[in-house]
Image 1 (cartoon, one colour):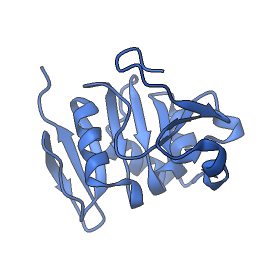
Image 2 (cartoon, rainbow, N blue to C red; image 1 turned 30 degrees about the vertical axis):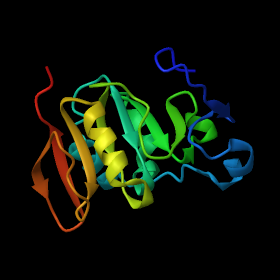
Image 3 (cartoon, one colour; image 1 turned 120 degrees about the vertical axis):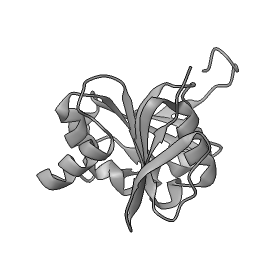
Length: 168
């Protein structure tokens, strides 16, 4: 449960359910991380999220979850995957959660977020931006709206990369 708002959330099979969906019924719909071992993809992911120094939490959603195990093996950040189960081999280094429209992290708690697919809603992206620390990275589909508090230094036909503007 949350000590601030006093709400309680279920944890089933190692996955936290910050969702209105019931885990007993929806638990079978979660897929397990399907790892991508291509070093070029890992390098791109690490560069987009600025994972050059250790520390912090990185959230991956949609197709980005394929890099969760590899990012965790870098040892530079704790990885949280959205709407996906951590693999048996990575359950110690990778956390798993289900969310509806908001990430359950406090102000300036995250180092980076990369999300696409149905999880990249305007509400989730806004929540992600407000949860990023100063200069934290947010990677989203190129057609998604950039949330307030984020500036886009790079964009291509697939994604944009935003940085959180100064956090006091």
